[in-house]
Image 1 (cartoon, rainbow, N blue to C red):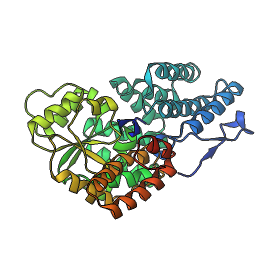
Image 2 (cartoon, rainbow, N blue to C red):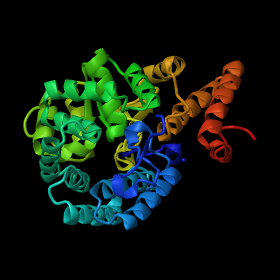
Image 3 (cartoon, helix red, strand yellow):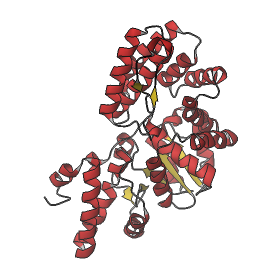
Image 4 (tube, rainbow, N blue to C red):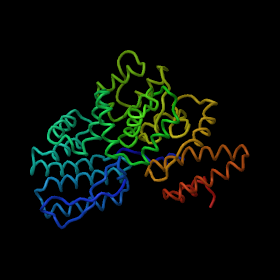
Length: 367
C-alpha cells in the first residue's frame, strides 16, 4: 500500500467469497487490496480477524490462509501509514510459513512469499512461479505491473495496465487522484511516488490513455534494484554512475537539471524531510528545488482544475495541504470572497475525511 497521509506535515464494491468446501457456511468479505480501496484500518483488521478465525476451522486450507495474509497485510499498512515495519513483516512471514508448510508448491505460497520479500529479487522469482501456476488470477495484476516497471518492459506495462483496467482493479477515486497528479505536471518531468496506490493508477493512465507519457514515474521502493536505478538515471538524463537508493537519487537528478523533479504528496516522510525549503506545492504534487514566483499561480490554477475526490482514503486527506496553502495566500492578500470559498471547500473535504478537528487545532479553519 505504502502511503503517508500529510496532515502531520502541516507544523470498489464489496466482494464476497466463501472459502472452499470446508467452509461452506462461512461468508466473509474477500480482502480488498490498496488499489481496490482496502485502506481503512478498522475494516481491514476486522476482516483479518475473521479470516484468522476461519483458518482455525480449516488449518490446512491455503486459500483461507492466503485471504488471512492479504487482510493482515492491508491492516498493517493501514495502521502504520503505509509501512509494514519489521514486526509486521515477521507476522506476515509467520502466515506465509504456515501456507508453505501446508501447500509448498501452491500459488498462495508463492504470492505470500512475494509480499514478504518485496522488493528483493527473490520476491519476483516467487511471483514468476505464481504466474506459471495460475496466470489468470486477479491477484497477479498489480505485482506483475510492478515487475514490468522494475524490468522496463514496456509491452508488459501495457499488458498489465490493461488487465487492471479491464478487471476494474483500481478504485475509481484513485484513478481520479492520478488524473489530478498528471494535471499538475509538465509534459516532461520526473515524479517520485511511494507505492502501488500512487504509482499504478498513474502508469495505467499513461499507458492506456496516453496522458503525459513523457513523465517518468519513479517508484522509490524499486530503487533498491540496481538495474532499475541505473535505467531510470539514464532515462532522466543522468551521466556516470547512478546515485544510491535514497533521497540522494532525487538530489542528483535536481543537480543534473535535465528534467524538473516532482514528489507525490504521498511520498515517504523520510524523503520529504530530506528537502527542507525545497518543496513547493503546485497542486497534487510538490515541485522540488528553489522557490519560483510561478509556484503560487500554478497552485491556484491546478486547484481549480483538480477533481479532488473525497473518497480516496488517505489521498483525499493529502489535498488539504495545498488547499490550506492557497487559503493562507488568499487571506494574506485580502481576497475575502476567495478565502470564504476555500474555507467552505476545505470544510467539506475535512468533514468527509474525518479531519475537521485537526484543521481547527491547526488554526486553518475557524470553529
